[in-house]
Length: 501
Image 1 (cartoon, rainbow, N blue to C red):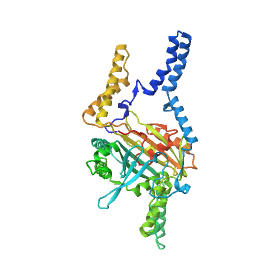
Image 2 (cartoon, rainbow, N blue to C red):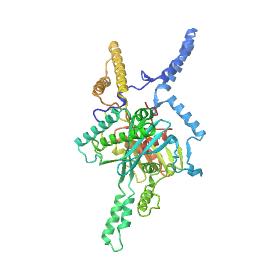
Image 3 (cartoon, rainbow, N blue to C red):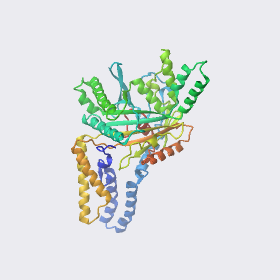
Image 4 (cartoon, one colour):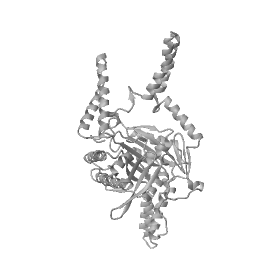
């Protein structure tokens, strides 16, 4: 992470008092009423007997077990069971049930139900129409681009620092206009199927070609299959209330929104190809985005799509595109610890980013497939705070830290190393905010997709082991695998956070 960016550990969580959320505090306060009622009626034994019960409730409410308190697990398990009994965890597409009528209508499961893809106005010499993703449920708009970057495998320390500064500049550029609420960076790695090279060999190898050359080309094809194919995406998410205010000055209504999104694409694209060092950035059209989504659900379909695109160059009657009605799975099911979609299964874990910062290149362990049958994906989401909200949260955190430190000094409690580190971090935050830096509290998700016939639990364990080798701590998103899959593998602007300002 660059020097001028910092994560959620520097800001207080909304609605948190003394480490407890407001619902937890209210529940524990109400739980003390039986003891007070017993004391008021002078039933001392009953009041004392209620103390162990209240301590048990305190343990179940506050102490986290696997990432959440026991009460939270009970509520989540009850909601998951109700959803299963009502059939909400199972999805079947209209094509699978024979009710498909419109090929342009999205037919997606779960969190993608309210998503609509629109075509933007034509731009550039090629008259490309950028795909605009409208999420009606979250009231957000998003655009997605494919990034071509050389990576940092052979980069020097100075170049890595320049890329880190470029990431900071990207977040600053996104925050300056006060329109973008989230920036999603996604990388997907799949074992290379070498389809393009195989098609080239079929078109160029002749019968009278030298035997040695043919054998060499075939051997190259075999060894190329040991590599991986990497694709990177960036997605900009803009809340509708912010976009509508700006659209009034850019043409009004839908046209104004489209023009505003195009201006944001040009602004962010200049930063990605400049300070961040990308070779090219291409904002996806609707057919290109549909193909990306289809390969997110079914990585094995890539060979067929590439072959269809190759045949379409010679025969115009060949359909190489993927209709939006067929871009999703024909059937999907949300299990407790994985997400099953068609002939594939995906396990997704969230990552607790280390407080000392993540090392650039640390995701290499996570993105490297352990076998040729798996596809791995990493998505990092950068929610961007407004400057006013960032100043207010920093002031609240500073007030809470000063109050706690004052109480410790009056009680004679020694301040530990963590307290000094936290105070120094808050001081740096105030200095950075005063200089106009951007506050962001990023989170990351990692997923592994394998055929449904493979041992899904074993590949999930390998993913978590790879995350730990990178110096981070994984947390399996149990009972939320459907939403986690969408956020980790599909660049559609859907995230784990649903509130947008």
